[in-house]
Image (cartoon, rainbow, N blue to C red):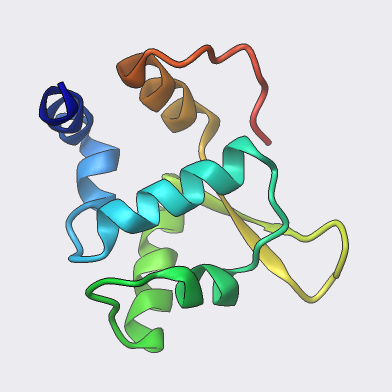
Length: 110
């Protein structure tokens, strides 16, 4: 069951792009949870939370820039600290993930 869901996720072009890096699946989970919970966790904190196969910080930032350029993620200013930037998955991608994982997606993601 897990592998069926995982393969279904990877069939999506945007998810597949995130998972193209060794730390991609872990990054996807982190940003998904942050988006779902509207968590105030910045880019640097997200990088620090990665445990496995982490790239160097400049390569990570370049990858985040690429994902943002493709519209897969977006950057938002933190509500608690203006100098902090938080990452969010696109609403469309959140809905796709929820649909594949069969999660109630009545919540709006911003």
